[in-house]
Amino acid sequence: MAIRQLSETLINQIAAGEVIERPASAAKELIENALDAGATRIEIATSGGGKSLLRVSDNGSGMDTLDLELAVRRHCTSKISDTLDDIRTLGFRGEALPSIGSVARLSISSRRRDSAGGNEIAVAGGKITHIRPSAANPGTIVEVRDLFFATPARLKFLKTEKAEAAAITEVVKRMAIAFPGVRFVLSGTDRTTLEFPATGDDHLARMAQILGKDFRDNAIELDAEREGISLTGFTGVPTFNRGNSAHQYAFVNGRPVQDKLILSAIRGAYAETIPSGRYPVAVLSLALDPALVDVNVHPAKSDVRFRDPQLVRGLIIGAIRQALARDGSRAATTGGDGMLRAFRPGYQASPQQPQQPWSAATSPSRPFYQGVGNGFGERPQASFDGLVSPTARSEAPTFSPTPSAPETEAPTRYPLGAARAQIHENYIVAQTDDGLVIVDQHAAHERLVFEAMRKALHSKRLASQVLLIPEIVDLPEEDCDRLMQFSSELGELGLAIERFGPGAIAVRETPAMLGEVDASGLIRQLADEIAEWDTASGLAAKLEYVAATMACHGSVRSGRRLRPEEMNALLRQMEVTPGSGQCNHGRPTFIELKLSDIERLFGRS
Image 1 (cartoon, one colour):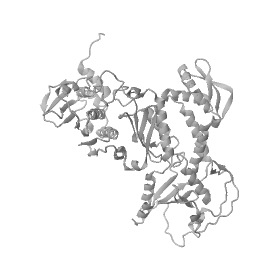
Image 2 (cartoon, one colour):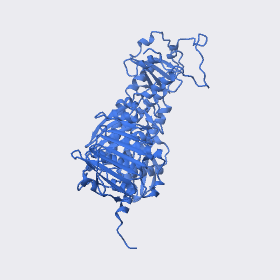
Image 3 (tube, rainbow, N blue to C red):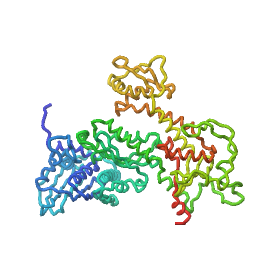
Image 4 (cartoon, rainbow, N blue to C red):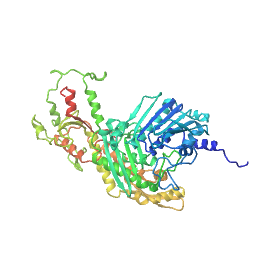
C-alpha cells in the first residue's frame, strides 16, 4: 500500500479527536485563550449542552487581521517560541481553533483596543472564509455552532444535553478558582445564569463562591515550600467531607489539572481521618520552575508529569498533615448546623420513638448532674500516654457532686471547655466561654490511643518476626529492582527483604504487628504500588490500620461512666492531639454550639 500525505482537513479532524472530546473540551480551550489574552471579564453562553451553541466573549487584547488568519491554522501560536521548557501560559500547542473549525462551524470576531474597528473570520468543516470587517468591542468573541456536524459519528458518543452542560459548568468553576481576579458569567437557554464576580486577591472568597459559604468556615490555610516548590491553598477539616472527589481542585503554575499523583497525595494525607467512601474538600496550588514539570503529556493539557514526583507527593502530604495537626481538630460547622436544625421549633421525633411530654411524674428522681460521678462500677488504674486505660478495673469510691461542684472543675477558657455532665454514659457535655461542646467519649479516646500508637510506629524500628524458612517470591526483574530501592524503608517497618537471584525476592522478616501474614501477597502488592506511584506506603497503611483496630478495641467504651477529672483529662488531651476532631473511622468526636446559636433557638437574639 502506497504512503500518501493526508489532507489538511483530515489532519485537523484527527487532532480534534484528541483535543476536542466534548463541548466542555472546546469551552476549556476557548476560556484558556481568553485568559492568556489578559481578559478580566469572560462570558460563556451555551445551548443544547454546548452542542448547538458555545460562545465565549472576553475583553482581552484582541487580534488584528494577521493574527486572525494565523489563529485558525494549525500549530500557529503566540505563546511559545522554540522550547517547551519555559511554558508560562495555559495554551501553547496551537491546535484548538483549527481543530474546532474542522468539526464545527466556527466564527471569530476580534478587535484590538487601539483599532478603529474589528474583523471576523469563519471556518466551517475545515473550510476557511476570507476575513471581513466586523463591528466589535475591544476583545474577542468566539462562536462555535453545530459541534461535530462534520464528524457525525462523534455525536453518538456525547452524553445528554444536561450532562454536557454540567461538564461545561465544572470547567468554568475550575477556571474561576484559578483566576479570582476575573469575572465569569455562564448563561444560555439550557441553564440559569451563573455568575462569579471577581474577588481580586481574596482567593478564599472565590473558593466560597464555588464550594459554598461553609467552606470558608471549615477551611485550613496551606503555605509550604520545599526545594523550590511552593504549595498554597486551603483544605477542609476532616469532618467537612463529601461523597465524591469532585470538590478537590489542583493547579500547577495556575493551570487546572486532574493529576492522579496529587489526588493520591490528598487521599494519603487524610488517611485514617475520614470515613471510607468520603472525600476531603481541598484546593491546592503548586508553583515551581516550568522546567521541572512537563505539561505537554496529553493534548488536553489536564495531565502533567513532575521531574521529581516523590518530592511533590511528600510536600503535599506533609503540608496537609501539618495543617491538620495545627488546626484540624476543630469540629466542622456543618455538625452544629445539623444539630440546630434538629432543635428547631416544631421538630418532631421519629414515629418509632415518640417523645413523652416532661412532667413531675416522668422526670428523673435525681438531679441531672448526678450522672457525672455517682455509683461507678469501675475505676481505671493504669494510664496510656496520659490517658486512662479501660482494661484495669476495681471498685470505685462513691462520688456525690453538689450543685456547686462544677464551679471547681477545669476553667471554661480551654477550647473544649470544662466538663459539666455525662449523658447516656457516652456523651460528655462541656461548657466553653461562648457555648457548649458535646463529646463522644469512645470516639475521642479511640483517636487519642491511635495517635499515640501511630507516633510509636514512626519513632523507632518496628518489631519483626523472623521467618524460620525465608519465603522466596518470584517477580519480574524490574519489580525486584524497584523493591530493593525501598528496602531500607521497608526494613524500618519490620519487613526485611533481599535479592535472591535475578528474578526473585527473599522475605526474611515480617512486621510482628501483622501476625501471620501472606508474605508473597504483600510483596506483590508493594511491587505493584511502587510501579504505579513510586512509593511503598502500602505497608505503613496496613500497620496503621492494625493500630486503628487495636485503638478501637482498647479505648473507653460506650456506657462507661467517667469521673469529672477523667472527663476533663480527656478534653485536655484532645486539645493537644492532632486529628482529635474525628475518630479513626472519620466520624466527628465532638460537636460545638455557640451561645449565640443556643440563644437564637430560644428567641433571645
